[in-house]
Image (cartoon, rainbow, N blue to C red; front, top):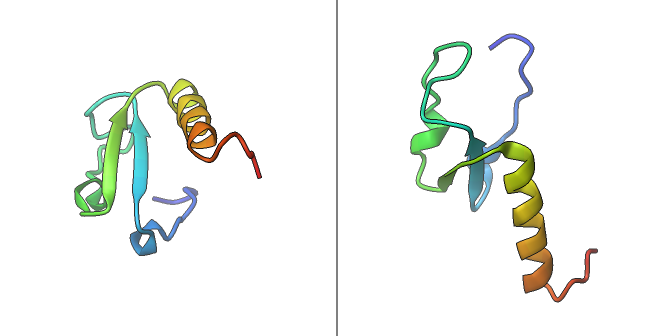
Length: 66
């Protein structure tokens, strides 16, 4: 889609996609990434979910924050 950033997440070990709902979004295009074996969908508000994930990861790491 023109103007959208390209992220090479297909090469990552795990990808978490945060979405508000199960709809196809503004462009109405189905995203093949959502069906990749290394992708997990998290249905939530993006800011809240990202902050919660960061907090959980910091707790796992012992709060290092590096």
